[in-house]
Length: 574
Image (cartoon, rainbow, N blue to C red; front, side):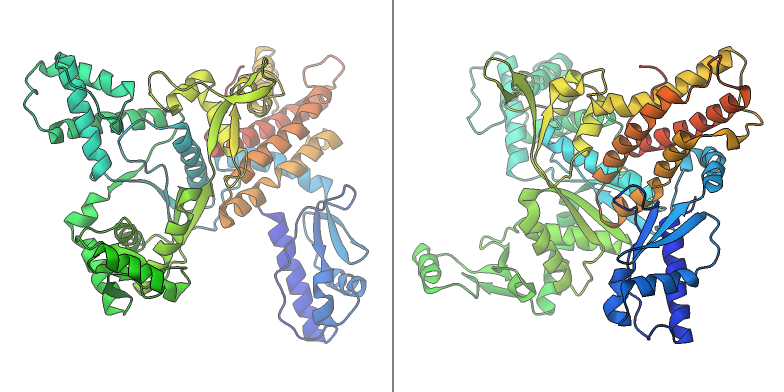
């Protein structure tokens, strides 16, 4: 289906150019002034503020607007185009055009408003990327939902999308994981051993140790921590994948950071940055003041390998390789993103916690130091999230008690068990990722319109209910004459036609939460119409009933599309 705002914007720009060619307007570069829905009712369905041309054209906005409208061609969707002070060009979509969109929506079905922004292009979305040292936490869950929704929207915009999970199964934390499981296994054998305080305390490792005992008996008593690390990693990844699958998330690729070391890619990246003049060796960074230098010398630090990131706007140069020869996490991060670009992705979206903000900037500086363009790398930052419940005694919200099974954190599994997969998906998406989120457990399980999950899904359920009843009565919408649709139904179609623009804006600005906002807005338009525009009622004429049944078929298509873009189910009954 067409994005009417884009069609109108192009027609307006063509009219401006024609007016320039005729001398009615002076020559100037036509700025991109978006056509959007007006803020006030009665100002049409699409609006263009010609005031943005006043300085360039050296004319009054109203004169410019009238001049442009006079040069517009006939547009099939425009019922009327009006000029309003101080210089708005307002377009009213024709009712006949809106009626035609009912069948168009039904025909497009699951591909409704599939755009061609990304046609022939590849996009990658990297999200979750938690090391396999434990289950998916509530904190990881928000990034998982945001990342998957972004991937769905990119696919809707025409991109060939890959979902990737980046992880590290080496390093100190994985060593601790292996040793933690080894000690838990020995406890299962009856050995008097204790876990150090900084080891993994979660009960999930007790379960893992019990399963190892059941499978292997005491044959693993003499095995090293590496054997237990491998067992823990395998178990954790199986758990992670199951947890994500429970909310309809599946990754296409799992990328191990260790492969960057095994292939030598990190050293190749370092050599390239050095050849480009961005690497130096020193005990301290080049911008260090006298106090820093004195401190380093007093501690006898040996030279480290530094990235001159301040050349690209960083506040301080970054260590790439420590004095003991071990690389910091910055070097493999840069190497990984170089690899992404070398794999030919036109867009590479990272979903990260806000605590990774500085590191994300350094990675882009590193890409530049490699002589590569970091523009394809986009980052969505998401803030902290916690599950809360209302405490009547205290008169305030409080964090949900910690999971007994997980130890010291709540998991995605806990959240789904307390609510539902759809509730988790919607509420993690329904606010801008850059805002902190309190997940109200009591609110999201309510079966009422106070719960936006129920409110949106119930719109689809109501459509499905009408179809079931119509089928039972042997009534259908064949030969429906859509001229019998009233203003209520047309108002819904007007709103539904904004979906394409919402998808576009969510993709262009990397704001997947916009689709959740729009879903709730559209449901708010639908429900009052459902109460008024009856189908199977004795007082409704047959022709009107057929037209309305066709309308509800189109509405069901729109809500199904929205729910799937958010990764939510579309239940037939509730």
